[in-house]
Structures are given as C-alpha cells and as structure tokens.
Length: 306
Image (cartoon, rainbow, N blue to C red; front, side):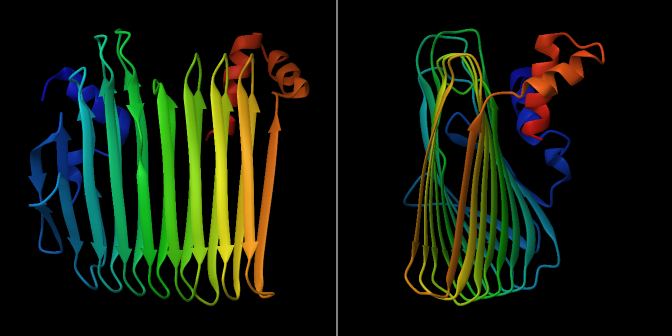
C-alpha cells in the first residue's frame, strides 16, 4: 500500500490499527489485497459473486474483525457482497467502511451490501465509517446496504458515520428481529456544498419483547440536501424508538419521513423528529469564550455529531 492507501485506512479506522485485529480483509479497487484469519474467525472469498463470507464460531468469547474498502481508481464502480455468519453466543466487533480518493474527473462509486445472520445469544458491534477526498471533479459515491437477521436473545449495536467528502449516498438498513432481540442503530451524517445523502430504515419486530432504537443525527450546510425515511413495523409485543435530529445552515435542506405501524395493541412504537438551526444562545456563549462565529459553529456541529 502507498501513502494514499494508508491515509484512507487511517480515516476509516481512526485509532484502530488494522494489523491488531484478530481477522481482517483489505479490499482495494475491487480486489482483496490482504487477509488474516484465526481459529475462531474465517474469511472466505465468494465463488459466485464479488465479496466474502465471514464465519464467527459458536461461543467465540471476543473477536475484532476489520474489513475496510479503499478506492483510488477514478471511474471505478465497485460492488461487493459481504455476508456475516455469527455463531450462537459469539461476541464480536466488526469495523468496516470505505474511503475514496478521486483526483480525476470520472465518477468513483462503492456499493457495499452487507448481510448479518446473528444466531441466538450472539452479540455484534458494527462500526462503519465513510470518507472521501480528492482534487478532481469526479464524484465520490457511496451506497451502503445493510440487512440484519436476528435470532432470539441476540443483540447488535450499529454505529455509522459519514462526515466528509461524499458527494452522493443512499444508505439502506433493513432488519428483522425475533424474540427478545435488541437492535441499536446510530448514524451521523454531515453534508456540504451540493452533496446529497438519503437514509432508509426498514425494521420489522416479529418476535415477542424485541426492541429497536434508531437514532439519526445530521447536519446539512451550504446547499446540501438530506432525506431520512424510517418504517418500523411492530407485529407482536415489542418496543421501538426512532429519533431524527437535524441541524440546517445556509441553504441546507433536510426532509424527515417517519412511518410506524403497530399490528397489535402490544406494540409500543415511538417516533421523534427535530429539525432546526444552530441556536443563537449557543453561539453567543461560545463567542464569549473567545471563539469567532465560524469557530463557534464548528464546535457546535462537532459536539452534535459526537
């Protein structure tokens, strides 16, 4: 890997060095370039499609898996299908995401389709960060799709971040939960310039006492546009809470489309949405501490997306 590759990985993984993971697969410009496995975690290339199958053995006490994607080739459209098979009672942290560097004028795109099959009593933390940069006029496009199938008593925490450089994105997350499954999803998105970002959540609570908490925090500045759509369906005794909070600045626009459907009197479903500008009181308070208006705005935005 060259310096650009390393920079992209640093932005995706932050303070989580890839070589310290128990298992990893690095994908660059449509091809796997490095891989590591251990006795608990196996990674196998698909024979009939682009992508990998990740298997975590039943009872794995703890494991860290990194599966970053980097794209440095302008004009490349990369589509990958990654399936995660998490065994009963296993505990694992999965760190994913994509970094695009485009210095030329052709569109570069990554579409990652990730499917999680989480067995009984298993626990997954999934971290996904998207980042893009480059001096060229070619667009950087990221379209992540996540499908989650949760068996009884399983849990998943999903943290997704898109904070810089992505011109267009369509983020789709679908989940089906069985008895006492617990899903927590948090997304944070920042758009500027002419960027657009759309999020779609489709969650079905099919099992008794299943729980889901979905939180979206977004900031749209300059002339960017964001759209949030959620559909949560409660088919039995269950609980779900959906929260969409957004800050708009300049000519930024945000659209929130909530939909909740209770198919039984025992489904407890809540949706909250708030869209507003940066509060003047917050700006004034920070400016009295010596920050100028721009610095104060940036501080508020960083705190909101933390």
